[in-house]
Length: 475
Ligand code: 4AD
Ligand code: MG
Image 1 (spheres, rainbow, N blue to C red):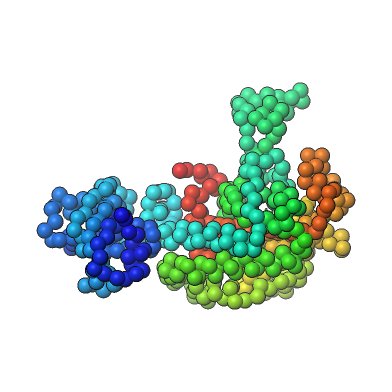
Image 2 (image 1 turned 30 degrees about the vertical axis):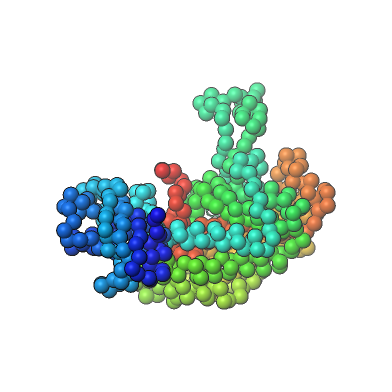
């Protein structure tokens, strides 16, 4: 039976027989093989006899897969407590050094690795990122499960545009070249698979609200799709989102839940992925050394996460946020690319000023102008703002977007009319306001942005196994 390298390295005992399987990272002095099986960042050193048949040794190349039977012994060398003295070594799969795209020790760039799908996973960096991504996903479920939430699977194919931003991918089986047409020349979706125009979902929120109106506390955790043409380091066309929705919660409960949630999952990784985090912290600090002094961050990755865990998120009003920006030296020196005034949808540069320069910690902004937010947000008494909340974090900008929902049928339908959202098509949503409506609130947390934040990686493409971005859907 195969033993995982992680377990051998962890228990540090010796004098027992094992079988390990993995991929060769390096082979030196015709004797020492570093083998990694992805269970942890560390390699195990396998020592083979100098008398090993050359027919075998010439096949021990970086990238080749091997199976080793041997004895775990105290290591003679430095750098590891135990190693394996091999009795037999079998090559499972050869790896031709002349064709293997690179030796991992040459530190390939992240951009280069994005193009070589199979190799990416074999590197220390991506191994660490995807183990942490896994831990985060597990911690998400654990957090909500421990609080009695019900995990609700909302549909991926939908007919409604929850955010009303019109950034949807169409789902159709109609022939693209010659779709059936109505008399007025528009496409006749009655003949389409679902008998209507359908899309990939941008958010599971509206459906989750129906669940919350009966189960009280639900959350979704699934893929969402946005056809926004933003080629940035923070946007994906396919990303995962966690959306809790809670009956009887107001905007303050919503902020508490989101803050607890972010702290819990961050703490869970700090506790369970120490080695991977330390590796990524080192990587980040090496990267920082390339930057000019004034652009380097003051904290290392682990300190940053611990700091977030231990600080109370700043809670401010949108109007206050705008005033801080207007008062800032950056604004006065005209260094913001986009203008600042009450009513704007804050740009990433503004959000990052607030968290990185002004408060130097996560910030929750509430009370946004209704014009820049979705139809379902609860209208405040001032008639101008809604009970929205965005959570901004250092290095990322917006991590969470949420709100208290408009539970009053008349206010909701009025707002939908103003925003030209057809109420008849949304009858199933409005029914929740007709039959036993209650105040409720929820939010969406972008999972990849969370992974970015926790791993200290800088491009969102590097924290999802197979990124989907404009003009890119390889593999
Ligand atoms: O702020 P958004 O658009 O909110 C909603 O979709 C609400 N329906 C959520 C809710 O209240 N249930 O998106 C929520 C979060 C953002 O804060 C961001 O972290 C992430 O989703 N996000 C993206 N992540 C990666 N790529 C994109 N293109 C993203 N768009 C949003
Ligand atoms: Mg948002």
